[in-house]
Length: 283
Image (cartoon, rainbow, N blue to C red):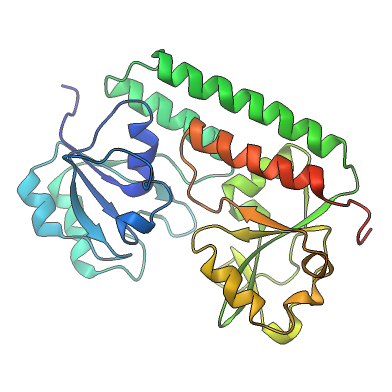
């Protein structure tokens, strides 16, 4: 029997909704209106059972009596979304409510989207629907344009960062699926040499050392944008990065893209930034 009553983590919901699979409930790591994966999707009639990382209303999930819970598998934590180390102990009760399945948070957003496509088809989605085909076609066009723009700037270097009051977090490309895609498609992204021990997604720099890594273009974590950029701009050392001093700053669609339409939009935007960048700025 194909599961019909699905509770999904917000990222999984964004992946499934694009193929016409509507969960009956969603839990998120932040307020729904702040969740970039969801904020443009129709959530009418879908119950919200969590809007804070690590805090799922397990009683509400149990009352829904789902057939299936869909959440992403995070290899570094060896846990599904909502069950990572540090989440509320009560969340483990989700394992007793319904089977949990999901796409692996892996080395490629494109692969994740294809995995969601396969999962959605197994749940009854029509992956040949006109809307799905249009989104897929837009993505393929955006990808070709992006690769052409990157090829035209062979010396371009890019630094992916997430600014915070506590410091500047420099992303490790191999641990961010979209950055891994960009690298595969030819973009030269700076690899920090001293990732944080135990949390290898980033190297944390004090603001005094903000200029440790240089690049022709800086891309900023979109999840708390533009407030995080405001934080960076309040730091006198932010312009120690030459690209920042030259206003070569764009947005990085960090950790939230889960469908063809969103990926196409993100690639179109990044293509514009690549085309405008000076690939000889720091080379």
